[in-house]
Image 1 (tube, rainbow, N blue to C red):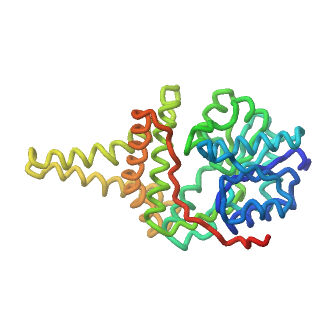
Image 2 (image 1 turned 135 degrees about the horizontal axis):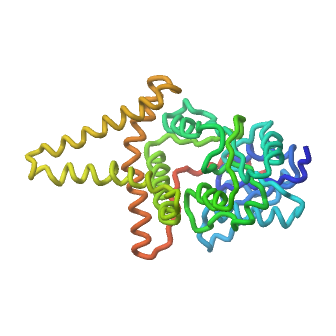
Image 3 (image 1 turned 90 degrees about the vertical axis):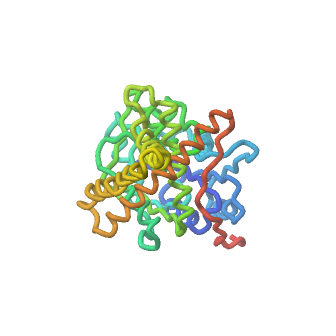
Length: 338
């Protein structure tokens, strides 16, 4: 396998030992690596450079997004090595599986119609909290041709450049949006049966999960705003579901209490039905407890997602720049003497 045709872009901020694990999983496999840092205060930049990795420190006077970070990392990567034909994007809180780069590169070289290859991202500690577990379940998606990838994926440089890279203005959902534009150009997105990365969410609080879910709602809203009028109606169905369960149904139930002498509250029985439907779908692959937890949080998540949708449309109405919705806490585990 000709690994000099492959480059790697890692993005992160204050990922601490998670970033160190990420870098150590790839530095011995590939030469062309760029780490893009967005204002870390935990020694990440020094540590990355100590491992011989090229570092891009983002200008923080310009609004930060993961999409912008990936684009700047890609630009530096191509400038370093113009022979690169494929690029692996990785989030700094993920460790790359030992066989992934070679496996994904082989698949991309063998399938010239494919623009993006992704595999199984797993949560490193799914049993530490229900929120970590929810991430692991979320990432267990079907194998084969798909519509989108996540933050960890290997891409064909020609396809990435053809569509102009990520949209740097998006604060979330930039990967599916990129895939929409790629598929319009005739490219395919493929998910293969292979271990790709280990993710370390360190999500232990309900508030963290809520913010992450709210960010997803914002992404659905923006995706529908950008591509909802296209033939595939990108994320329109998902956004309608969020509005119905997260806003319309509860508002109707409460607003009509006086007119219906309380009978309108019966509408809220739709939520147990929703939970059961999701549970029935997941019980084939999960045990009872995990399937029920997933269904319960999917239902509650409609309210967080609705908040994210409202945030997006309020910003549009006010003509304001959308700001990041973050859920992680600061990590400072790197020895600053590195």
